[in-house]
Length: 484
Image 1 (cartoon, rainbow, N blue to C red):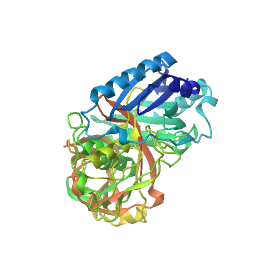
Image 2 (cartoon, one colour; image 1 turned 180 degrees about the vertical axis):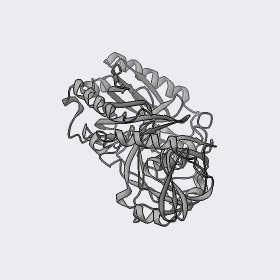
Image 3 (cartoon, one colour; image 1 turned 90 degrees about the vertical axis):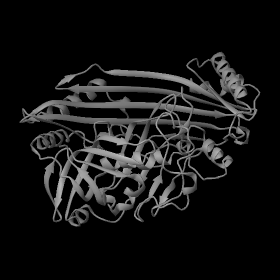
Image 4 (tube, one colour; image 1 turned 45 degrees about the vertical axis):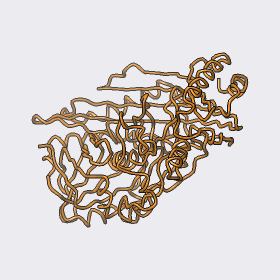
């Protein structure tokens, strides 16, 4: 289908100011083994195209699974009709957006492509890891899973753009639930919502330590059933990368989405405490906070060479030394902000979840840069506090400001040493002040590349894949509480 996309597009496109076509082919496989029993494999194959039209100062979009030339011609007709219906009612002249004209290719680096292994081999691996979890009768439920995706996308525009991109994605996970003395606790390898997910082939499993991690997950689940509740009070907080991932996502990523700042998410997922005037001067965090939009990190989940509007992608700093610099805004939102009187430099981050959605401003790879402090130094600096790992719950208000997060696993830090394990560790804060309490940033040895395949946004809804990488980070004077 993608081989003929350019030919069909140029034949089907109407006489308009500008047009584009984005074709997507996606194949996925989901394997699960629960309590030693392989579940029915799930495979999915999806393909289609999204066309866009810019004419009479407005834009229109239409999608179709009919990838023939007549199917694309019909979609172009609908998109043109929508653009004409919107003409004269837009916030800015869409004709001022220059059509992208860059061409190029991108492909995930894969040392051991999934397709080179047999289904039986992948299931045997899951069975082996699954068997390693049942170390004790107190483990009452245990699951191993492997979700793999192969996505190919081509973008054609009237400006001459022709980009091909292919992604191979591997998402492993391990879950263990333990029950002891009336207490039930679940521990995961890196998050119950798949915190370890990367581009690549089956070598991703090596980076995740998947083969050997079952006993560790089981032991920690059992530990949690016998652990006391997390202490409560204001104290120092050490967050490990698999919780920092969620902290970055909710209280930096979503607030910095430019379309949200402009009001687009108001009646679905809320707005943002960030305003247009904050960029360039607002102190988002302490001087230790440096946050990058980095679509060029090879193994990270949301790396790419071009966004879904065809804009070339480059690494950009969003927050430098704690000062807010740029929003997560693609070309369309940048034009809207300029029309509102606030020109802003954004980033290439217009993305769609599939062929049947129009691109909107999304997080891609949003990372905290590593600092210079070792984990031992951070632990040693804490007189009394809690280290927390692995998100399991979250709540944040509709301006992405006040939040409350819970973790799977905690350990008290007392007099500079790791002490007892605690269960149900939680903390709360306010985005506008929480990041200013950042007092130590871990070095490269503490840095981990994580992500989530389940970021929701938009109307109609889009669930997209996002990468987050972070070192361990220490915060001071945080409200911490347990489950009682």
